[in-house]
Amino acid sequence: MKELILGGARSGKSRWAEQCAAADGRTVCYVATAGAGDAEMAARIARHRAERPATWRTVEAPLALAETLAREAAADRCLLVDCLTLWLSNLLGHDPALAVDDPEACLARESQRLLSLLPTLPGRVILVSNEVGQGLVPADAASRRFRDEAGRLHQALATCCDRVTLVVAGLPLYLKGDPLD
Image (cartoon, rainbow, N blue to C red):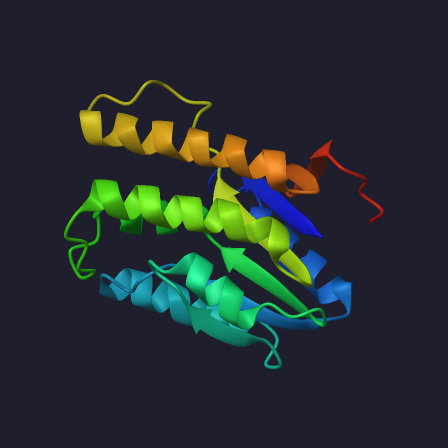
């Protein structure tokens, strides 16, 4: 089962994804895409890690997400990826700590790898991402590009996922697939 969980900032999407992973019954591997670019983000990452069950393994994948999923996926494992919009931001070169020489090529290559690989992975994969297309048109070109790329990625992932869930105020709205699967 492949599931895409979307929602706005602080919508409860990550908490919902964690509840789904915990209820799945498989061994959970948490695939983190965020980097600790500053002290506030480092504290946030530490807090989130401390809140997760101690039995969950965490693997960091700020850029090579498909490679990480291919290595970690197994029939008896649930991979929880949080979050795709941070990964997308990394690919676009927004984090100077990550050496992305050619953001255009990196984005195209890594997105295609993810989309090609996802349907073939064994086990369960839960992908978490921010829905960023419901607000105003961003004022600057970089923000518009980010919004556009996130929208394209979400549409492509929704096509190849078994279930797509939108979380608002902590409540799931199933857009695609059976909620009982």
